[in-house]
Amino acid sequence: MISLAERINDALPQTQCTRCGFPDCKAYAQAIAQDNAPINQCPPGGLEGVAVLSKITGRPVLPLNPDNGTEGPMTVAVIDEAWCIGCTLCLKVCPTDAILGSNKVMHTVIEAACTGCDLCLPVCPVDCIEMVPISNERTGWSAWSPALAQQARQRYEARQLRLIEEDKQHASRQQSKAEMKLADLATPTRFNAEPTTEEAMSAVDAGKEMVRKRAIIEAALAKAKARQKS
Image 1 (cartoon, rainbow, N blue to C red):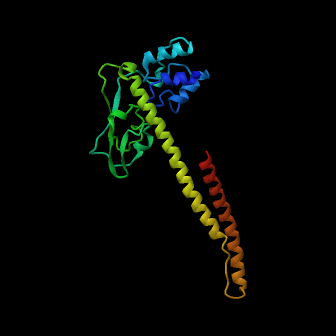
Image 2: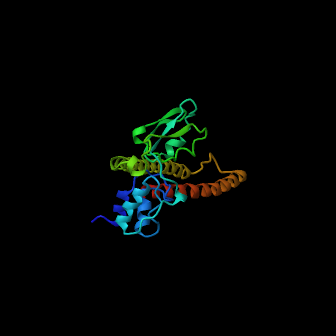
Image 3: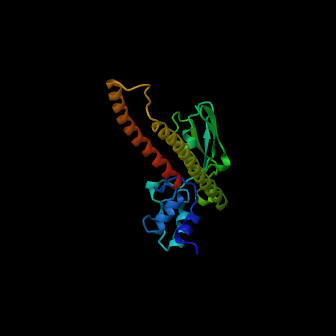
């Protein structure tokens, strides 16, 4: 049986714009289901979206909360290629991987995959991104569609899985490095003959430093292992 939170999430536009005050559409849906958020905080869904959520939850229809934004036409991000410096900051925040590019290489937007979330605007250091309306006077669900919402959701979920996998791979590399460093620390100091007093004192200091380094490396190793299990 589909839960209330899932039914609500299915009814959201999946732009993942965070204007509702939550990190993504799923989190907003869960908050509504748990009665921790009202149904009028999704500008992309518009008034029609509020009406749909009203039918699902049994709550009264409310006007959109202006604190979360206003209903408007569908927009897509357009990058001014002449000004783009290839900083990759917009790539890191795009919820649907709709931006292509790499470090110090000009970026471009896949228009069909852009949800108009606006999240790339505030991170661009050179203001080379513009949100361009593409739906004329149509707003909310009149401008968006269930098919586009489903595509956005699939791309967002695929991105989340990719980020998790990349984090685990990074943690695995960090674990390998930490284990190698621990092995190096375990190698004892060798003297060619009976150590002098100065060498002995130096060995004591080195031992203390080794204990400190070991603690740091073991903490990093534990963190890396925990990230791979999460």
